[in-house]
Image 1 (cartoon, rainbow, N blue to C red):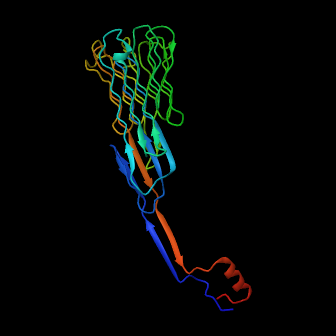
Image 2 (image 1 turned 90 degrees about the horizontal axis):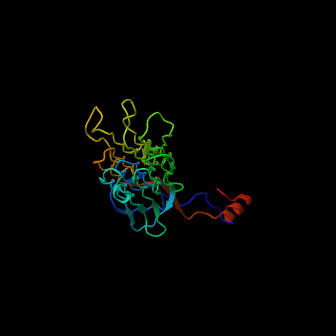
Image 3 (image 1 turned 120 degrees about the horizontal axis):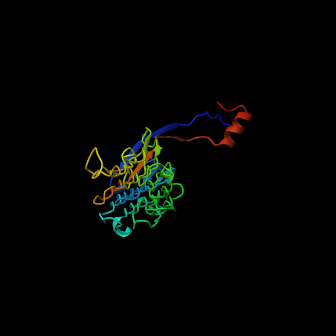
Length: 315
């Protein structure tokens, strides 16, 4: 039996560097030649806050550690933030004064990953309970009198519900990491808004970044000494407005929009003549891992190696 050398005739290593691609607007993702699966984060557009009502919910936060991709281009759609509620005056109807839902962010065409847009904040006729709108994270609820209204539902795996509304208070918009807060009717102050829910952190870019915070609710802060503002959730949520016309230190509405490309919910306006904050636009981030592939020609099969070793003919 011939003596065989225990090595391949040629060994080749092909390498590909890690790469992170961020889409702040819609486009097409094209994988590197060796990439077959990627780590994807898709955040949808946050919802708008209501005029003198509840906070907007954050856009859905969908993270998939390993998602297959073709060698051809993959379409990417970035969801826009929902508009804030318009001025409707005292007792304005919900269709005019509510915040609009955010739009979905989508990665792919066949079996796409879809992050769901946030649910809008609400504001209705005084004394009528209105539940928050569902979405990636739900919008806060509105209740202009006794009783409770429920916050909008979040999408499982993407976000949390908005805060409930008790008494004359309004709920904060839900965030990807926590629900919007509910201000109990037993609080010493009434007609104030709940804080937006916290966002969720991801290290897909190599460092931890929090996105998709909910918008703060608002209505009016009540008497002097009561809280002026409700905060937006960490990760781009807009704070709720303050009732500036009748109370110091400012006569300007302070409601804030959600931060762009975080999916943050818009904060609610507190004035009867101030619109709600706009939701923040979404983002899609794609992480391709580094790859090293070793190939060899003329490798011996295992059976041949075994026979040669047994016959003491393997060198």
